[in-house]
Image (cartoon, rainbow, N blue to C red; front, side, top):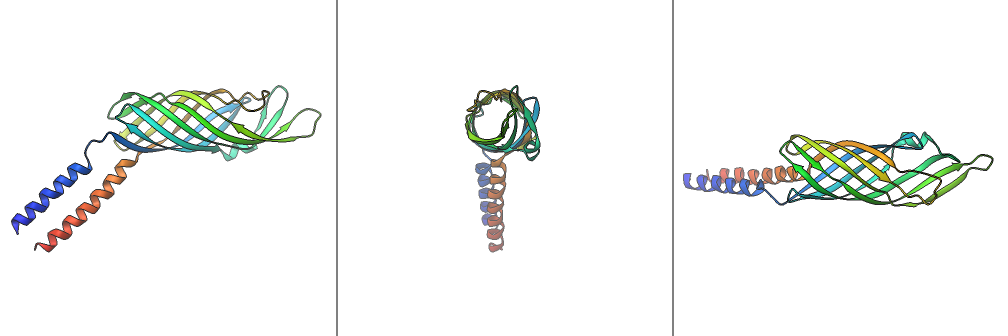
Amino acid sequence: MAQNKDSLTLQLQRDSSRIFRKTAYRFFARIENRNSAIGGKPVDLYGIMLGVNVHQRHVLAAGFYLLGRESYRTRFFFDEAMIRMRRLNFYNFSYQPILIHKRYYQVNLPLELGIGSYELTEHLDGSTPEFIHGRFAPASAGLQVIVKPVSWAGISVLVGYRTIPLNRRIYNFNGMYYSYGIWVDMRYFYRKAHFARVKKLYRRQLQETR
């Protein structure tokens, strides 16, 4: 009996070491709020990114962003026009070299390229409002800092410059932006769930040896 118990305990320790071992890939999720300005007015975008940390040197990620509800009510002024955004969303693809990787913080250099679409209403002086829709390809570069009070979760802060070449030159959507959000290491939850199953099996097998 004691030998069986020792064998099961040793197997549990081996399984634990295997589950929680250091790996080359770490999958993560990031939920964030991006803030910038269009025509001097604040704009909010909400989005989520999923990605993988490779060898703690590179990050590859993809996400989706959409216009915040308050931004639909804002009037954006340009030299020749006033516009109202009806819709703006895009898919975002990112490569991020990791500049610094420490236990409690990480510094990345996000290089992003996206593809999306927009709908807006254009108001020109002396003319009937015109509904416009089209596609655009935002590109940006910035600096991201992730502060991690615990190893599996942290606060992400990002500052960068964005260029958005819309189909009409009258609109200048280029400019600085910043974002803040929550960064979560998805591997943590997978490992905890996996270990819980292994431990449940261990307890059942332990009961059978009695």
